[in-house]
Image (cartoon, rainbow, N blue to C red):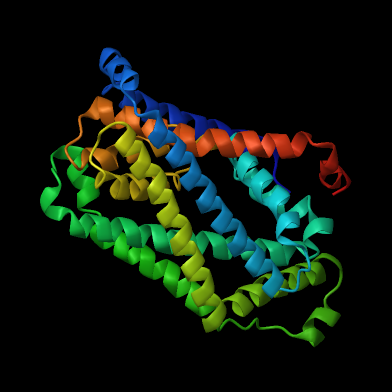
Length: 327
């Protein structure tokens, strides 16, 4: 069980990290320039960005439902939508990815699977996302290398290509190995283990079992295709925002990849500061002024954060959401 002290330490350290990146971002801000930019925004493209966001999360929902149904769940796609959206919304509002815990624990009656099995689907989600986002950013850096301006800290991101290749290969390796993992204990060992140890054995067996089951070739190809479609829709969000601000659309690929991988750094709920800094850095690679790049990153962050969080809160407040209270 986690101690309250450790929880608060991680929360405060995350807030400190966010504050650190916000201070760095603030150096590039030009309030007058940002106001002029916002006064000339093509808001129709922001609507397109929101539609792309909806498409992306619809595909993610299809992916999760596919994993659950392949693991034995009889929950409908509509039934999975509530825990899915609420989980992502709570990740935007609470520290330590608490939304993932809620998605696995609070909706057991809806999902109709053991908690460890649901956690296994979430682990595979993260690995697939890491693989695809790393690949997209790596390819974007390679394709646009000649167009990229690389002074100072911006050059550090451009030089990250070997690291991204290693990151993508690592994620792919874990996914492939998951299909071959066999735990070193069987039914006899579990029967001879009492109490907490037996429960841990059972849960670990379920976690490894679902990863192995979903990592079989046919299922994995389906999941990879859905993951790629989801992240291409996410690129659409970044591209539409770039069109809205008349910024180079080529920068949307690097901004998406850098901003998303930046959220791996533990920070405040909603990845305030970390996402914005790295998304702006990804746009600056294409010669965009620092202040404009920050305005772009903040706008994209708002598009990604507001609709999903608002929808999640609506789902939580609906009377039909009694299952989360019964949990």
